[in-house]
Length: 264
Image 1 (cartoon, one colour):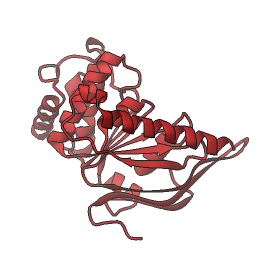
Image 2: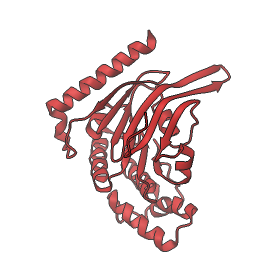
Image 3: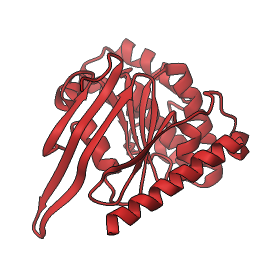
């Protein structure tokens, strides 16, 4: 079935098998999913279930061995060359010898943007992630949460429509994580980006997402896709609401069912 016109990522019967010295590893199996423009989609599942592998396939960093995958109606490799997405890794990955502004401008330098355009874009994204005034600082002068915000700013600097995020807040404490979740929702509302977000946290997935994709243990399959009924405006105390708790229970049930299927 052809994807809808506003579908920006479409996977159909996707498979990926890694060949290793110990034999083949089936990382993804028969994954079919459409992501619409402006969606905030979280991928959740146990370690090794293929969440990050699927994100890397979207980014053209891994090559599926079966099925089809398109990004903006292109192959992932074409989309990567067209700079269709920004990618935020688990670690901020900032160069310690470059200032925050120069870390953010690095992809712009590589792409050949002028110095004036680089400064304009860096100033804009620093404001987006609430780091105005910190461009001249070095990574070691910033907290872990601020470093991760700088990493997000770097991914936003060339204004790609899609933002792929691989557990960006996983190493942070709960208080900082809650604050960054709030900031990320505000950023999403301001930019209207399409976001793919990998997490191990059920509350984080439910709080952030318009759609939650629950994945089973290897080989990674989709156990459930949950369209969230929560409003786009989400104060932290929405986590005490019945709708939030009901979604969290469904995610937990999907993880349990997927795990049972995977070991049967």
